[in-house]
Figure (cartoon, rainbow, N blue to C red):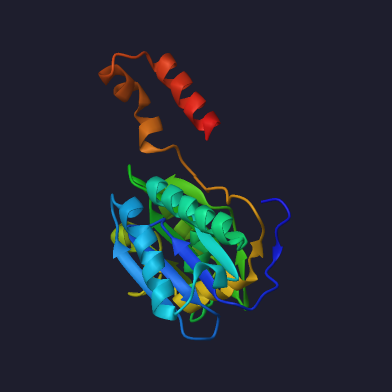
Length: 258
């Protein structure tokens, strides 16, 4: 985002997270009371997100113009959820003048775990089609990435987990760690998988949102793999009587128009 900089105002922050099936909206200031709204919004995020934002603002006695900034989790995760969240955040920003910031989901999960863990922390989330999103971190006072976020099949993810176990105590967080617990623990039998590690801690999210760089304009989504439609383009095209080449051209044109 052009002209992004730290947020100068100390007012309330709105944080929208649409990357996982549990759509989440947070409102508050770091270290103070945080309001949270959640909805298991699989398949209908577009219908429920705006009412969730309106409800949480009403509960706080705030108008959209009172927001100091709007942070949006930009990925990786649900393609539809990311787009709906980013579009909603952009609409609020344009209407109120509140600056926007993008947050990445895997560091939010790791930072939440790092409050109670040392050594390696690996965030693992479900990515469908036999894949997970994964990023390793070193928790030693500060949280330091040990590699970029990746979309990996499970055997490659298990290899990353084994590498993390060689660093020291290992904590695995995220719904991918829970879902694939048995396979990942075979790679690192002593790894800890906290029962509350599937969602980032609201206070941690607000703290990192406060530290993010804000600016005007749209936050770019973070996608680490092609969408299901792109991966199955040939099959979808055949069902509509199109050649794969024609379908690819149409898809490229649609993305360019965005």
